[in-house]
Every structure is written in structure tokens, then in C-alpha cells.
Image 1: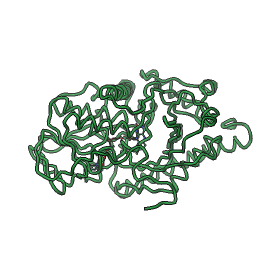
Image 2: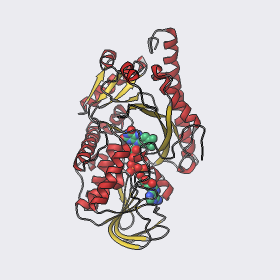
Image 3: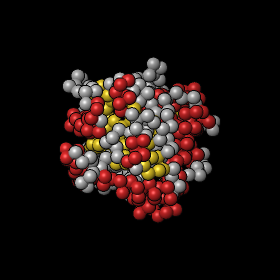
Image 4: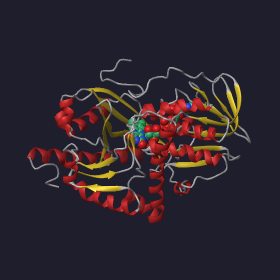
Length: 452
Ligand SMILES: Cc1cc2nc3c(=O)[nH]c(=O)nc-3n(C[C@H](O)[C@H](O)[C@H](O)COP(=O)(O)OP(=O)(O)OC[C@H]3O[C@@H](n4cnc5c(N)ncnc54)[C@H](O)[C@@H]3O)c2cc1C
């Protein structure tokens, strides 16, 4: 369908692969059947194969067509809502364990990229959570201090240091996360897909799971075939409620992104941003921006949508696209004429405490799942795969303990929809207020935040 705005159904990062794998059309047996071919599922399958297991992976589209092929590509050690919230809920020791988990997730991803020789334009530039108004500064300084005390490699950057780094002027202060950076998410997931095929994972695409028959062995059914296995892994993250499972555990939120046309040499020189750090803002619902290796800017977020019953909110969303373009124009006034080449979006999986969950269910304890990365899954989902593989082999990964907690449950509908609406509206109102303050300070010529 032709849309007035330049819309991509999946994203500009990925295209359907040249070697599509066949749909499942027979009845098979395997040691493990993995459902979902994103970072979680592919990384689980690879780790299991490395331990000699016979693995079948079922993917409803093509592997990489979910969030793993749509995201913004910030590889970050971000965990939970924020560090002060983690401290409040979990105390010092547990929060430090979570910070360590998030660091290890970045290291594990770097190791996977290296081990499989995945050319995904990874740049270890770090990421900056940036304040756009003076009122953000104290909050960021405190958060940086707390995070450093817990062992995170972060540093507060004041306005002078932000300017020294050549960061665009709208970003006034920040917390530099030194670990991680940015990558090409499509090349990363396609690299995992290639590695999984090379390792002997039996991948079936266009093969949606439609039923799971539980028992000492599980049978995963698609419309034309089935796989009987000792264990199943649900690696469907935000799509999981649509399979009828874990509705109280995870909810899908729709997030939108854009990519500009490439910047010219003069525009790049004027912009500065020499270190090409990933940037996300200290808004309640963050804005994200990054430079790609093709010298475009990818950005967005800012607007999230929840659909009744944890359905998948529609993709073509002009109000969201206008809002993310508007934020880009405000933060990058020198690029007022740079056209937007693409809009797209995907679904993130949110648990109520913003932390990922690994678990096993079913009467026979053979239904494994790993999900709920709250929009930070590039690193976390990769590590989750290694953790799931360990669990299936009857061992426990040394960092799994960090994720063990009493989980909070999403309420049933209509409360879930009402609650999500109320929270999203309240956070949006706070962000609008911040943006108005930034605008009015700019109009007065005092610079964002001089009149906090
Ligand atoms: C717009 C956007 C921006 C983001 N930006 C970032 C970022 O910059 N940094 C970061 O760390 N994270 C980011 N994320 C989050 C990150 O992309 C995800 O956390 C991560 O990709 C989750 O990986 P996954 O494998 O668990 O899920 P997915 O990649 O979503 O994979 C799940 C797969 O399951 C398949 N599936 C679903 N149902 C079935 C079924 N019934 N049968 C078979 N297959 C099924 C889907 O087709 C899909 O391919 C972003 C997400 C979005 C949407």
C-alpha cells in the first residue's frame, strides 16, 4: 500500500534474505525447538548447537523481521528504568548485580560479533544519555554518581565537555556510558542468522507457531507441520502475548523511528559529533539519535503506543512520525532541510519493572522463555540466548541470579489498557512541558534551561 509518508513495513536495515528457508511441512523431532528468530532465538540456537544439541528454529516471517531487524542499533549497558529506581526497588547489592549483568551483556555481544566475524559496523563509541534542559543536569549528575558507585563505567559530562566533544548544541549535559556504542542492527541479526545456518540449526521461515502440545515432550505445531522436542524456547518477546502466553508478564509497545537522507560533507563538518556517540535524551520517554556509517541520522522513539489486549499497535502512525521528525528538527536546527528518507517502527516488550525475565514453565518444566528487554535488547537478548542454553542443559549462567526477583504482573484488561494510557499520557505531558521550556528559553535567547 502506498502511504503519503515514506514508510517501511519492516525497516531500511533489512530485506527478505536471498536464501529464504522453507516453511515447516513435515513432522520432525529435535532436542530443542526455538520459536522466534531474533537476537534471543538465534543466540539461544547458536549456543545450544555449540553444545551439540539438535535445534529446530521456527520463525513466522524471516529471521530478523522482528524488533531485531528494526531497532536503532544502540548497544548499551542500560538496565531497568534508571539507576536510582533500581536502587530504590532492589537495594545496593542487587542493583550492582543488575549493572554487572548489563555490562556483561555488552561484552557478550561484542564477543559474539567477533567470534562469528559479523560485519555489522560496530563502533565502540559509547552512548550518552543527554539533558536538553538545565533541569536535567542535576538528575543526570546524581544518576552518574550512583551508577559509578555500583560499578558502571559511566561519567557525567558537563556542558563544557559536551561542547569539547563537538556534540550538537541541543544536548547540554550527559551521562556517558563508556561501554558499547552503535551497530547496524540488520547486519547483526542477519550475521547471527548466517552463523546459525552454518552451525546446523534447522531454520524454518514463514512458519508461525500455532499450538504447543505440552507433555514430557513438547510438540510445536505450525499450519503444515510439527516438531516434537524435549524442550521449547519461546523467544518471541513483544509478540509473546499474541501467542496467547505470558500476557501478565510482558506487554508490547509500539515505537517509531526515522532515517534521514545522508548528510553532505559540509553538513557533517558543521554538525561536529566527531565521536559519533549514540545519544538518547533524559526525557521520560526518550528521544534517540545516532549517526550511521552511511552518514544518515537514525532517530525517534519519543512516542509509544499500547493496543488493547496487548495487540500489536499498527505500524503506519503519522502522528508519531510527525512527532519524531519534530523532535529531530528541534535538536538539529542546522539540518532543517535534510529530508527524512524512511519511517518505520516495531514493538518492544515491556515488563512492569523494566527488567528482562528468564523462566521455565509447564507441568514438565520444559517451556522456557526469555523476554522483556524494555527497548534495550540488542545486548540483553544476546546474553539471554547464552543463559537460556545453559538453563536447558541443567546449569545456571553465573549472571542469571541478577534477574531473579518477584515479578510484577500486568493487570488484566481493561485495567491494563487504562493504566498504560494514563501512564503514557502523564509521561507525554511531562515531556511536552520540558520541550516547551526548551523552546521558550531558545526564543528568549537565554539558551535551554537558563530559566529552569
Ligand atoms: C523501534 C525499536 C527501536 C529499538 N532500539 C533499540 C536500541 O537502540 N538498542 C537496544 O538495545 N534495543 C533496542 N530495541 C529493542 C530490541 O530491538 C529488542 O529488545 C530485541 O530485538 C529483542 O529481540 P528478540 O529476539 O527477543 O525479539 P524479536 O527480534 O522481536 O524476535 C521475535 C521473533 O519472533 C517471531 N515470532 C513471533 N510470533 C511467532 C510465532 N507465533 N511463531 C514463530 N515466530 C514468531 C517474530 O516474527 C520475531 O522475528 C528497539 C526496539 C524497537 C522496536
